[in-house]
Amino acid sequence: MFPEQNRMHLLLRLLLLCLCLHCVLWTVPARGMDLQDLQSKLWQEQQAKEKAEAEIAALTDKERSANAKLAKMEERIHSLEAREQKIGEKKQRLRSQYRDLQGQIQALGQQRKRVRQEVRRLLPRLWEVSIRSEHFKAKVFDAWPEADRQAVWLSRLTDKARDKIQDLGAVGDRLEEKGEELQTTRARLSSKEKELAAMRRELTEQRLEFANRLHDLRRKKQATHEELAALEKSIDRLKSRLGSMDRRAFNSLKGELPWPAQGKVVEEYAKGDGKFEDGIGFSLAEGTGIKAVSWGDVAYNDTLRGFGHVVILYHGQDYYSLYAFLSRTNVRSGQKVEKGEVIGQAGYFPAAQGPGLYFELRRKQTTVDPRLWLAKAP
Image (tube, rainbow, N blue to C red):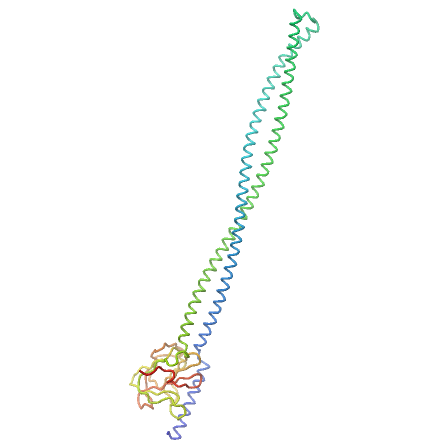
């Protein structure tokens, strides 16, 4: 047993170590918080992904509706164009009919002119015959049959001329009516054609507006697809990191931790016997590299009275590993270290009476038996 003075000195050193660990608990950023941050980030990314998927679905519905409206507009425009074409063809036929009527009217006018000229030539003779008949009666002709023939001929000629003039007038009137009807129909078709053209222009403008809107929808949808793809990649990376962190979770490594150094064990974990009972002590060759037993953050890297130069690593989930009596260190406070990374070299360890290492594992401020966590010694 140690003398009472040595026992008190040891208890003071252990108290200082506990105070140091207590400070570490409140000042060192924990890897467990990193895990929480990752989980929170993953949740946020998944929420954003769901929102992006919902937005894509909504944009798809809008795009489908816009496409349907655009298709109906295209059908209406094609229908109007077909109607315009038919009206144009009908107007062309009317123009042809109108030209034909104009030709007929012109021909009838010339014919009427000729008839009138013939009548004008006949009138003097008729007048002469009428005067002679009045003054000379039957003396005008040598015989009555001849006079009768002449009278009949003149009468028929007069009637024919009159009938022809009347027919020409009636045909002229019909042609004029037909011409007016054609003009009215032509004007009505022109008005309808203008109305259809205005409707087509309006529909064309609406189609352009819908096409622009559809373009914007597709561009927004494409951007949302790209955002969704980026979110999916981010989610995959976060899941990979979480999986990696899950594989690195300290509480899953019990019985699998590598030894911090290979050497003779000179102190065992035996809580309560007044020695370095809270951990394991090793006797090592001078300059032996001390390795981190797991991934972690350097929570403490400084001298500690009674323990020489100490490095404390925080491994998340409130677990710490302590490496004491180091001659030098290769790390700095706040640095992240890998599993098996050399963090320093063995220094003088009193219990080994030479180069060695004192090693502890703690959960919060309570020590745990390192043998339960370290892999079986080779």
